[in-house]
Image (cartoon, rainbow, N blue to C red; front, side, top):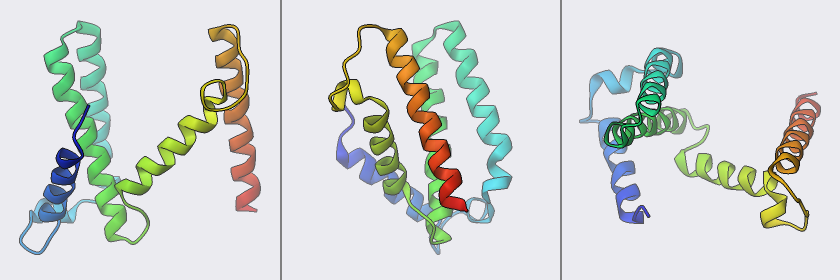
Length: 133
């Protein structure tokens, strides 16, 4: 399990990189300018999974986490959200989409779980469309 202190340290590293004495290149990046790197890192992780090399997989997951942190830092600078908001949103989504674990829904198979997942996801999408109107 990751220690909270490691996550705190990671957030401080990103704050430093984007701070007054930080990295000029990092500070110049935007969500759009980082898209090629995000795609590259995802592809590298997929290739590593297919090879089954856990040591490389750990490294590539770190690169994906870097992308999450980078995009969160940019959004924080823009006053939109931060990585804590990303984590909070993920926790809520996982709990909402696993009512058989966190709620009272009874299931008998993985097939039912997947069907329920898709039903919940469709309801979420309908809700987002109504919220935009």
